[in-house]
Image 1 (cartoon, rainbow, N blue to C red):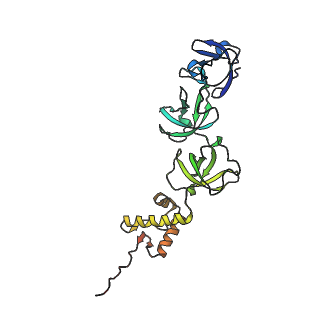
Image 2: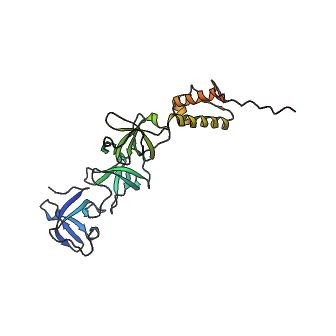
Image 3: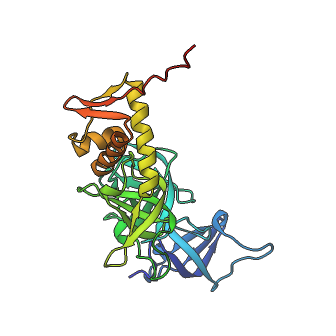
Length: 296
C-alpha cells in the first residue's frame, strides 16, 4: 500500500538518484513504484541539492503521459480545497482549468452545473476520479464553511461570488470566495449568473448561521429610482406603458427589475403626485397643466 496521496502535499524520502532528477519512495515496497521528482520540478536554494535520505515536501499528480510524478512547485489547489481557477480550454467531454502546473485539470461535463467560459475564473473543488486522475468540479457550495459567529454583521457590505442556482431561484454564494451565503429570489432582480461577482449586503443570518444577502437598495432609494424609471419608460413609450398594479410579478420583474410590491408603491406615489393615471390598458402619463403667460 502506498504512503502518498494524489492531489495532496506529501512528505516523501529521496530513495535514489537519476540523471534527470531523483526518485522518491512510494512506500509500496516495490522500486518500480517510486515516484520521479524531475530536476525541473525541484525548488531549492542556490547551491542546494537533494541527497539520499532527504525528506521533501512535494505535490503528487499525473503528468501529460499519465505517469505519477512529483513537484516541489506549489499548486493553486490541493485535494478537497475550493479555489478560484481559470478555464483554459475544453473539448466535447468537458473543460480544463489551470492549477499552476505543467498539466491542466479536467472538469467533466457532468461536473459543470452551469456553462464555463474560457478565460473566466470560477470556484472549483479538486477531487480524484474513479481512474485515480485529478479532476475538478464547480459543485463547491457544500464544501464552503459557514463564517465564524461575529465575523460579519447585519448591514455589512461584502463581495459575493455566485456559485450555483437552486430550483426555487435562490442563488448560492461565496463571500470573499470563502464563506457560504445565500441570496433568495426576492432579494435580486438583475440577470445574475454563476461566476458573477457582486457587491451585496448582509440582510440577516439564518438559524444555521448562514448569511442571507440582498442586492436591493434601501426602500427609500429603490422607490425613488423606480419612480424615475417608470416616468422615463412612459416618456419613451409616448405616454403609455402596458403595466399597472394588476401586472404579474414576473412581468414587473422582467421589465423593471423590482418586486410587484415596490412597483405598486411607486405607482401609488406617482398617482398622488398627479403625474400618472391607471386603467385596464396600463399606466398613462398625465401632462402637466399649461401655464398661461401674463396678460397684456
